[in-house]
Length: 290
Image (cartoon, rainbow, N blue to C red; front, side):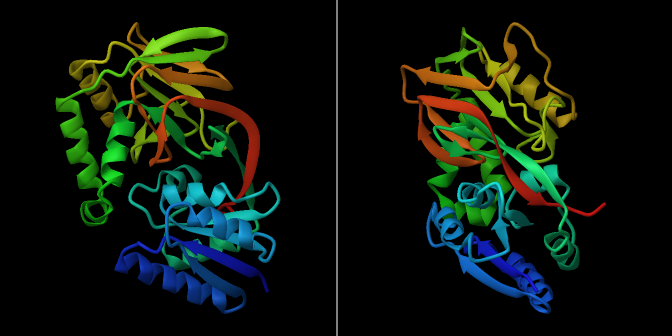
């Protein structure tokens, strides 16, 4: 018998609650399972830290934001499992975790561990990616309307992204990496292959790889943004050019003279400056046996 702690995003939909309850019933047949629901932003981290030594397995039930918060309360010893119940579920996509209630329950009880490498942004862990500029503006706007986000989900992101493109802000970013200074209008630092859902951004890293890859978008215009977008839609990797620079670095510092928003794992974090470090910290993720 295992003691299993499920930390759940309290704002998931009725259908997702139904799936969570089915998983709970399956796990509870031979295990001691408790569900803790989040009450506010950052609460999942607190719940994880309070319960991590009381249970054998910590489970994050929600989207990438909920998983991010739980990871910020994890250590490198306790196993982490996930129940993907979010909008995009990029982390679950990267980890190959999907299926019905029975399949997810089997993964939680699989005992098969893969190490996920976790970098930091301003001393906070992130599991997928961070960025400053265009998409961080989108995340900031969407998070200011959580009711609309819960109703329209991906459609709201698409609508806000379209509006932000029409009034495109060219943030003037200064980036220090590998003892070299770069200038850009938008920056994405990624630990994941995918971006914004099933769109493949890079083949050079993934959540189980140690590397973080940085994309610098220079002289950003609506036209070259649309070119990048359609490249992602066609499932092709972005290619370097004089307007798109790809950097591999374990230590990146970003600043700006103007107020520029920052997001990590789809959650608004605040504003620049930002320090990204590849700390080599790991989390033990429970995955499929095969």
